[in-house]
Image 1 (cartoon, rainbow, N blue to C red):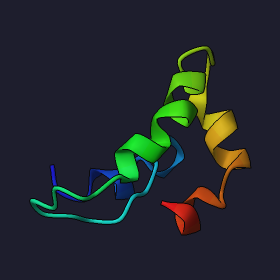
Image 2: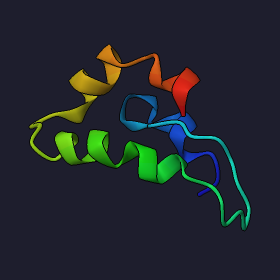
Image 3: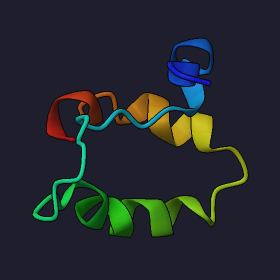
Image 4: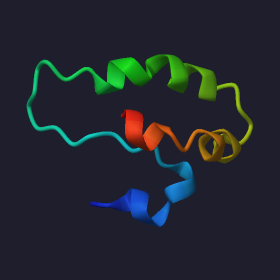
Length: 57
């Protein structure tokens, strides 16, 4: 399952890798965006318009 996002790029939200970092807040910062995605009938159209996410998260 590793690197599954490579096969499904249009569905992926890239975030920085972390391992047991209790101070990591990447997913918390993404919550508002993820919450908004739940109303989309097709998230791919939204994700494709938000290519800058790759630099942010």
